[in-house]
Image: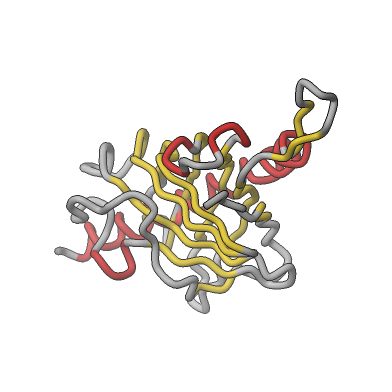
Length: 191
C-alpha cells in the first residue's frame, strides 16, 4: 500500500471518528429519551442496549480523529443484537489529508460499560470503503473513554474481507481529554 493510500485510510478512520463525534451529542440526548418507553401497562421500559456519543482520539502527532455513535437495540429485540439500528461515523485527517466514513449498524453487543458495534459503510470519501463491514469497541470509563477498531488488526476498511458482525478490537486508543461523552447502556439478555 502506498503512502497516499495509507494516509487516506488513516484519514477515513479519523474522519469517521469526527463525524461520529458530531452526531454524538444528539445521539446521547436521543438515547436518554429513548432509553425508556411506555409499555401497555404504563410501566417504563428501557431499550435493550445502546451506544451513543462522540469523541476525538488522542494522537501526539496532532492527527484529527473523531468517532461518533448513535446505535440502539430496542427492548422488543432484546434477544437479537443483530436487530440493532442506527449509525456511526469516523474521520481521520493529518496534514490536510484524510477521509471520513459513515456506517449503518448491523449488530450491537454491550456488557457493563463496554460496547461492540459493527456496521457496513454506506457513505465515504475513501475509494473502495462503501459496502465494507467494520467493527468498533468502546469502553465508557466515565473519565477518559477508550476505543478500538477492527482495522487495527485486519487492515484498513478497504482491505478488510468478510469481517463477521459484532467484531471489534480491544479498546486500546484513548480519547482526547475533554472530548469523550460515550454512553453505553448495558444489555441484559434473557437466557
